[in-house]
Amino acid sequence: MGAINRRQAFLLGGGFVALTVLPMAANAEPSNDAAELIKKFTGGKEAAKGKITLDLPEIAENGNTVPLALTVESPMTAENYVKEVLFVADGNPNAGVATLMFTPMSGKAEASIRIRLAQTQNVIAVAKMSDGSLFTERKTVKVTIGGCGG
Amino acid sequence: MADKPRIKLPKEAKKGEIIQIKTLVSHLMESGQRKDAQGKPIPRKIINKFACEFNGKPVFSCTLEPAISANPYIQFDARIDEEGTFKFAWTDDDGSVVTAEEKIALKA
Image (cartoon, rainbow over all chains, first blue to last red):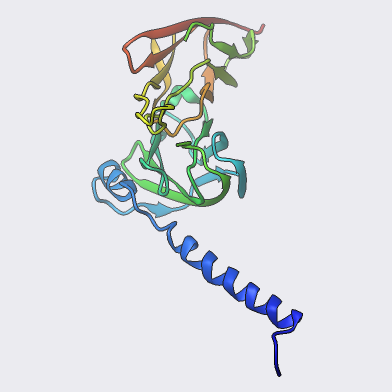
């Protein structure tokens, strides 16, 4: 075999792309203060999975405004209600997104906001109930255009 | 932040009904991450707090970080047990507060 034919050239090109994309995916590891914020919120206690439903797009074309809807299962009575929900984004320059505070007068532990995401990352919610129990949920959002514009 | 906030909620509700409230306020929500044409960082200026109360009792509130989109939209629910007035307040980084009020009546 002499010179590289077209098919081989194509394969080589494909391999190159795979090599350059992989390290970028690795960069999406949490690098900000997300873990510290969660620890501060929970007081170091472990949060259980469940009760929380996060509605976020799988792919956000515009990271400047990503719709985020939250539902937490709770009767929302004076004895048993969702007190606070912390949102953090583990790939933004600052992890903090928002903290929502509910009361029994909220009727439902539901809320919607719009957030900025700088890159593909996880959005993590931690809910604190009136009895002190903690629940958490996370969702990965792929971001096409980052939203913390530089 | 000169524009009047936009608030959407029903005019009346049945006793015990849970209603949805949508709010939108015009604000740039400058994150503090951006740089101007000279490369100098633009200082952060956002709405850092929102609160809603009904007849003087807290219903819902939140603290906001720079990761909230411009013109922050906040949607939440409230249970109506009596007629009364909702008070909304948005607090800016510079200390200014924009407030709004909406009344709700009980359906017969």
